[in-house]
Image (tube, rainbow, N blue to C red; front, side):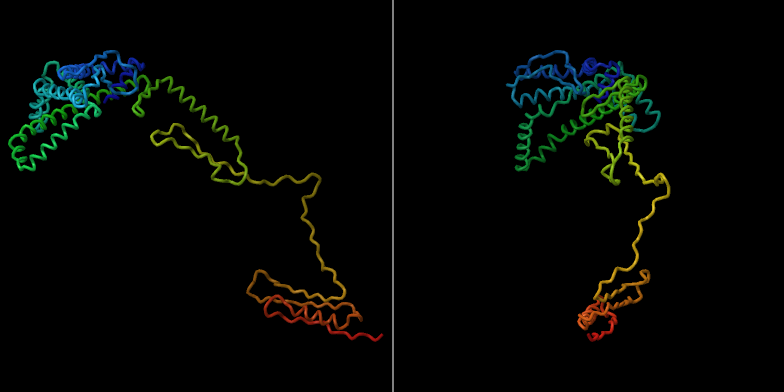
Amino acid sequence: MHEHVFKVGWLITKKQRTTTLLYYTFFLPGVILHELVRWLVAGLLNVRADRAIKLPDEQQIAELKLNFVRVHRSAGEFRSAIISAAPFLVGLVLVYAVNQSVLRVPEALVILSSGTSDNLSGALSILLSAPDVWLWIYLVFTVANTMMPSWASLRGWRIVGIVVAIGIGILALLGVADEIFNNTIAAPLMTVANVLSFTFAFVIGVDLIVTAALGTIEAVIERITGDSATFQNGKLIAVTRKERIRQQEQERLRRERQQKAASKRSVSGPPSIYNLPFPIPDAPEKGASQTVTVRRDEQSTLTQGAAPPGGSPRQPPSVISGAAPEKPGMAVSVSKASRDTEDRSKPIQRDSVTQQNTPDHSKGRGAGSAISSEVAKDEGTGAVGAATAPEEEAAPE
């Protein structure tokens, strides 16, 4: 709710300093009551309270800094807690008195309990029949939203809570806690609980009405002027129409530069996922500030080049055919592993070709025995026997 008030102030003035002043002025009745009660209670408790009344400093946070009356440090935690809680108690009493006596809210609720449309109009007529009804509603709104104390100032109430808890424990041990509670405390406690629940329900209803009205005013002003304001991490982020147009133009130019740079950039090597420009996300508490376009690099393909000048297309290299020359004095055995590579179920056939060398009377039988032992060492299992050339007898000299 405080943020809505602060945003409406900026949308109207467009100045941070003026927005801060309007924000404090809007809650001025509640601010005056809060600081006045603190000053009076500090005087009753004989605590020094200095007045520091000045214009509030410029701020971007929708939070009321109620430090116009400064309590001296010598007050202690307990007395400081009483001084801080006094505006809350006075505010509750004031809000309850207004909705009971001036606005007559209980009477309107009794009429609404039947649930008919005629009773609804009757309840509204009772609420709106009060003199200066909107002024009273505004007063209740400002007081209810400035009466809450800070948690840091309530540390002194820990002592009170401990003392009350010890007293209840002693009464429970003595067996008189139930009797005292039922006969003495139950009825006043229920009355206080009903008053508090009714008062807070009334305050919540008023806050909802004012928040809806402020939200409507925000939407209308933003629609007409083109300005916008929002809160991020509790701070006001305001952008005028000119600034937003300039930011959009800068964003468009940045995207165009990125696209041009991406189109000129060529990636060498095979396609890889590491070459894709994946976006880098922002922090979890922030939204995406930039729009990143992921583009897949086109794969280059090889095309057939033009024929060389001068003539015929390129010819494949020639293959040397023929058999290797034979060495004299040896018989070579050639084995072929397979004749048909497509059908591997057929048995491998081996042809042994034995060539006889020119008769050499000096070697004779020694060469023939060497060739026979060479053929016997076949690589495969179950080798096929090779025929050796018949030995020739050495011719007589």
